[in-house]
Figure 1 (cartoon, rainbow, N blue to C red):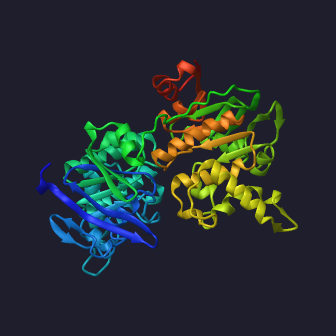
Figure 2: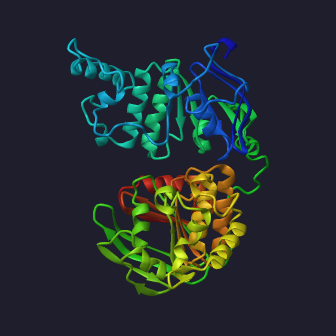
Figure 3: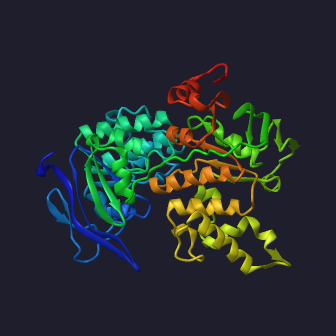
Length: 505
């Protein structure tokens, strides 16, 4: 694409926070009608850069320029950026659930009658026109809160178009989408591209980057590290630029000898969620639960851990049946659980790293209502070293850590309880490739130490890379079980597409 096609040209901008240079002389171009991936580890500067383009942050004085359609511009706030045609669709959607689709699309710019009242006919007609352009089967009058996450995301895109978007920035847009919903999103991104809209796509999912983007811009430590043409690039090249080294073994398969049965689930059922779930895990074994979002994997895990009450079935730990009516009983029985949403379910974001690490063990490191600070510090120091947790201080609030280090804090919280069984639900969601490799290595080490590990993942390469055995699920039922050479992409795809009898390799 030629020089005249640049919608945004960023020239040597920097951003400094107290004690941290988040961006250091960043430059890039985003062209009309192209999809540019912005990739990098957590802490690479992606969020800061996005917030500058969105008008939420300003650059350091005198550090460089941002050109929009060839003219130097400065955004004082997010409204400035939106008026200039730069719209950001963040991971957490910003819609009003109790308003209609049409109202959300034109919020702040609702058409009025001569008397100053909302012109509903015009509003719905305009919204219907935009929805039709995007080939969306959504009625303008429907409340946004009644829509699926994917359709809400499409409403955000429609709103962006109503505001005359020249540039749309997508921040981890598929984090809550099923494969089908992701395909719908990608079709609409391609439609936007054909209309000449410039797209910046931020994601940790490299398969998506290769599928949907034209070019890739790599950031590391707040600096440009590489500008690549997607079709001419290999994954290994991107990873090396992102983390500054080659990852020899991205996945670490557990080679430890398997012990006795640690967990057995027999006929576990929960009405409308899953039925007749039966499987076992041996000590030192990694068993993967694989299926699409909505297959019932997380619900099974939550029921085993006592967060949900089953309607039928039995749970055995080391051959003995146990009654697990709540999470406290699960912990007492020797289980740990790393939830899918670490921020909502795994951490207390306003508390410090040391407090989050020791919180599950408070009863054991306190007496008469007084916390033994030396024991708490010893626990934190042990797992900070074991898990290579990067934090400037034990007192640092956990909300300020990168996604990878937050996940390590959640792991530390449960590992200090010495669990026999550890369930990890989407353990690498929202973390960068370098941290993913560390988590994969850690999973293998946990199994080698004798822990029975259950891993739930929607990412096929991950589940294949870390599991000794894979159990597939669809619509709340087990559809297959695979080990060794039978763990292949085709077998897994076939199994999660089945609607009838389960298969076993």
